[in-house]
Amino acid sequence: MRHAKPNTTVTGLGTALMGALLYRSLKCMKLLIKGGADVNRRNSLLVTPLVFATGHKGYTNFVQFLLKAGADPNIPDAYGRLPVEHAARHDCREEVEMLFPLTSPIPTIPNWSIDGIISHAKSESAKPLVQSHLERTKAIMKSQADHAFRLKDYKLASKAYGVAIGAAPSATLYANRSLCKLLLGDGEGALSDALRCRMLRPNWAKACYRQAAAHMLLKEYKQACDALLDAKKLDPGNTEVERELRLTTKTYMN
Image (cartoon, rainbow, N blue to C red; front, side):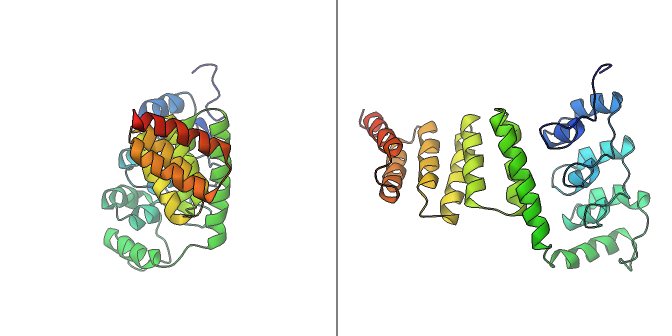
């Protein structure tokens, strides 16, 4: 790590530390912090690693690690919400208990206690986030996912598409993540995203094509043929669909 630059931006997702967090690699995070990574540096969405970790379920051990590494729990997100509020919104009491003694009292929470914070978060979670913020998050993460895909980093692209989907789901995002999972050899995941894509945009030939590709990977040739037939009906004359249908039908018949 002597010659590394741990705070350099990586594929638009922020610092290498944020990338390691996205990959859920504690080992990489430890090495980066040892090499001088700034645990409080914000990414392009103006969130610190601690805000990101508390904003998603399943990152409790990373929250604990970041706090021990010196992460500041009083740095808010772009909307002024602190990590303890994000943890409470996800009803993660363990994280709230970690963050509570390190967080300065929030004036808008009258009952400044662990139970009071969780109760307040539940009432606040019923209020919708500003749509423009969600669309901004979606646009930024899609752009970064597209960039990772062009670099053939399909795992990172899949995760970035997932963050974009969490902000504002769309058929295009599910289709793109389905392709990433297909290229990673995850047939079940590719199929799940393709089906979600079809539900959001049932008359889109590409959604059918993604479904067919996932079925092929899973060696479900009958279902693949059916999906390709749907694609052909929606986009007659598409030579790629017709070619795949011929090949899949031949495989199925054999």
